[in-house]
Length: 343
Image 1 (cartoon, one colour):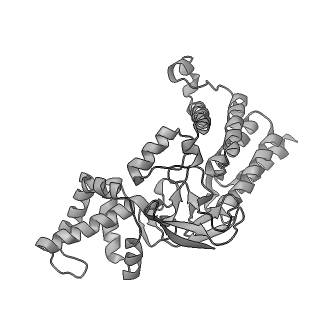
Image 2: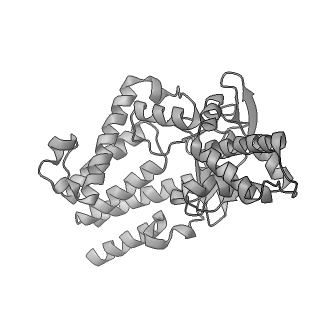
């Protein structure tokens, strides 16, 4: 379904479709080459080095093939935290490698340099396994070769039910077209905010439609304002009478106003072809606010749209999303129950 090509224009690999791929198709379901369990960030790289010691030679070789930008490498060399964790890792093992051989002088510095390169690969290619890294972080061979777009045509998500990272087409993809994912997650950011994150973490400059068209950036600015307004409503910050004046964000006070705000955000997401998890969350918000406004029929309509989109993005193996009605099908059941009570 896909192939990997080298692109001279970006001095990196990229993933292309070898045939037409329909929206909702599962492009891949990858097993991680390595998993770093959930640990505090200040211990993550040390634990990564530990896991690399245990990894098979084949997996280590596959990880070494993943790339990173020279700019990132130079920055990582000056990363005090990374240096400290790598040196601390070898010190804790009494300066020995995984065969028990004592490392001294040039051999030690070579081992440190190699470990730093692997840590840079991890920093730039790893993905959280579950929300906020609930199941740790992992490195995947195909995902690690996919490039970024602020208007992606594929969605990647770790599925703990399958214990794999799934990648689904969120738009129809033609044969020969490059497959893009979104590195930074939240699409409700301005071009400046996205550019900073992309350059600072991955050393890249995005030239997708959303980054070169000023009109698109105006829409993203509006999306950011709407997103902030809903966040303030959820946490109660908008109850402050001076909220709008202080923060320049509309003051949302009722479930009906929240529904109207979420519906506008929903419209803007769809207008830009942003059919990822942000749209799923916005559909859930619309459903929730409609339910809180006393209109379960409208709530069910949005819930069913969320369910359809969720199947496109992650498939139907969602038993891990049953708790707290996280998954769309569980939310649909809840809304139907509320509709039955109101009948």
